[in-house]
Image (tube, rainbow, N blue to C red; front, top):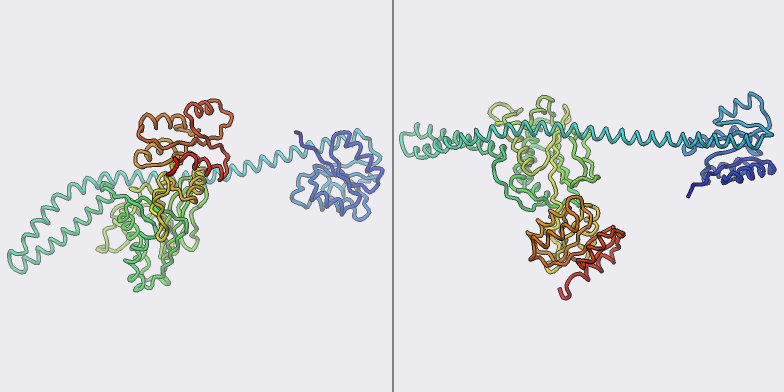
Length: 545
C-alpha cells in the first residue's frame, strides 16, 4: 500500500484555502488545513506533513516568521515550504527565501503551476531524505569500519605476540628438557654430601643445593611457560579463586598501605579452568602490581570482574580505565581487570612485557618469569591477556577467560541454592544463542536441569557424556540441521531413547513437515509462548517420571 503524501496548507482566506485543498485532493494528496500560525505549528509537530504551502500574510504572525519556526525544528530539516503571497516585491521574495522558504508563488496562481511546484518540491524532499539516509548509513559503516579496524589491530598485535611467544615456548621447552636431567643429578648427589666432610664443606654443599633448587624452580617456570604441562580442569567461580589469592596477600597489602578495591558482578558464571594455575596467574599479577607500588603515594589496586559478550580490547590505565564492552553477539567471556596506580611502563617495556626473563626489577630480585607464566597460563585456557599503561598512571591487566556455553548448565549450584537432583535433564540445541538462553531460562524456572548446545556436533558430544530425559532441537542449523542430527543420533547412539521435540520456524516447509510426519516427532513452532513450551515438554516426557 502506497504511503499518502500530506500537504499542510496555511492560508487564512477560506476561499483560497478551499481552492488549494480541492486542487490537491484531486491530485490524490492528503491535505491538512490551518488558518493561523498557532494551529499551523501544532500541525507541523503532530501531523508530520511532507510539504507546507504557507501564506505570507497571516492574522497572528508574518509568514516569514512562521517559516523560520518551522525550519528551526530539527525534525523538519527536510520539510519544504512553498511561500504563497499576493505581493511580489523583490524584498519580500528575498525575505521569504532567507527565512527558509524553498520556493515562491504569487497570487493569483495557475493551478497547473501550483501542482508543478508542489511535485518539484516533493521530488527534492525525497532526494534529500534519501541523501540523509545514505549519509547516516555511511556514518554507521564508518563507525563499524573504525571498530573493525581497531579490533583488527588488536588481533594483529595478539597474533604477533602469540607467534613470538610460541617460538620462545618451543625454545624454552627444549632448554627445560635438557636442564632437568643434569639438575636432578646435581641435586640428588648434593643431598648425599652433607654428612661428609667438615663444616665448611657442608656449608658449600648447602649453597649448591640452594642454587640447584633455584635452578629447578626456573625450569619449572619454563615448563609452565612452554605450556607442556597438563592442566586439570574443573568448575570454579572466579570470585573464589581471586579471594583465595587475596588472602595470601592481604597482610602484605596492609603492611604496605595498599588500598584494595574488588568488585564482582552478580551475573558472573563459573568457569572451566585449572584452579591452581589461574590462582598462580593472579598471584603473579598481584605481586607485580605490589612491587610497582613501592614508594608510591596513595597506592591502590583495583580488581573488577564481569561478563562480556563483545571483542575484548586493550584497557586504558587509571584513572581512565573503563570496562570492556559487555554487549554484543560474541561468545561470553569472564573478564578480570586488575589495575594499579604505579609509575606505569614505558612503550619499549610494554612490547616485551610477557617475554621470559624481561623484568624492571633490580638484579637479584627476580628472573622475569612471572608475567611470562601468567601469559602462558591464560593462553593455555584459550583466554586473552592484555595490558594498558601510561607513565604515572599505572598499569591495567585485562584477562578474559571463555565461558563454556554448551556445558554451562552442568555447573554446580551456587552456595545456598537447593540442588534439584530429581528434576528432569533437558538438552536444548539451537545455533541462535538468544533462543537457547530463552528456553534455558523458561525451563530452569520450572525446575528442569537444562544443558545447551549451539550445534548438532556439540549436542552429540553432550549426549555421549551425559544422560538426558528430553531433547529439544532446532530444525535449521548451519553445520548440521535437525534431520541430520536425528539420523546421526539414531545411527550412532541407538541406546539413547530420550524423546525429541523439533523447534522450527518453517511453518510452510514441505520437507520439514514430511520429516516430522515420518518420524512422528512433535514440533514446537516459533515463535512460541511459555505455556506452549511447558505444555509440549510436559507431554513429551514419559508419564510418572
